[in-house]
Amino acid sequence: MSISFDCPHCGTHMEVLERYAGETGPCAVCAKTITIPPRVVESASYGTAQAPASQKDKDTSGVPLGTLIGLLGGAVVCFSVIFLVAIAIVRVALPAAHQMRVARMHNNSQENIRRIVRALNQYHDTHGSYPPAYFTDEKGKPSHSWRVMILPELGRNDLYNRYSFQEPWDAPINLQVIQEMPDVYTSYGAGATLGSGTTHMAAVVGKATMFPYAKSVKRSDISDPHDTVLAIVEVQGVGFDWTDPREDYDIDRPQGTFVIDDDTTGGKLLNSSTLTGNVGMLNEDTYHLSNNTSSATLRDMATRAGFEVIPATDFKNLDP
Image 1: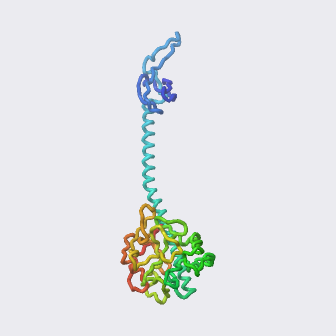
Image 2: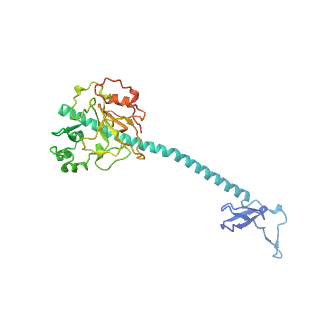
Image 3: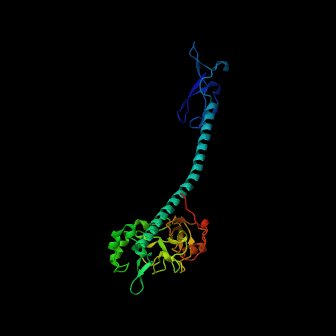
């Protein structure tokens, strides 16, 4: 026989074997302490209450209290295992997702660098030489950037035609163009940016590089293999106006440290002497160079006719 019983705490109705009458234990649902009452039996002849004569009269219907307790314990263990598995998945998934996001950012920057180098090569095909790092005015002051000169090759004749080469880059008429920066100059691998109209894409400038300041270079001036000649780099820092002819990566000045830090979080302040590692070679190959790449190797890559041997192991693509 079984005893019908409602939990006084949660109201759950249950059938308990009468051998547990008078015993105390946790409710299978709310886990609060309950006491099973004795079973009351009405007499068939006189209608008086009698206690059961012996356990022989009990049947096996209902749910044993021990079983209920076991079920509760099993549920707790099950949920604990699920919780621990979920934590383990999160710990593995979050770093992996972050790494994939960082890889996409660097790959997007590399794609823009590839488009820039392609435009530089098209400029050479049209004009017979690469553009200088900048054009100067009659006083020798930088007035126009190479980034403006290749606008037609980037398919932006609209901006090129609105830019006045009779005025310096920072004249009011030319300042209007700054806010319409072509998307190819957008940086994804740098950790911070100054705002719209700013870029982190810089030419490698120096006497022995592809961009010897105000002088133009022809392909015939390049003795090193084009796949080892460094042309464009992405710099850290807050960025600079994309039309500013004074802003590039000058390896002949203290700025040209050739230190790589590929942090993309913006959690630390990095200046423009630091590279993100995203670079473009003259043959339009792009790479994400490791933070451990030596400055000596990068300096060798920057020359156009240095005859240095660049180990292939120094080049690495960043896979998503």
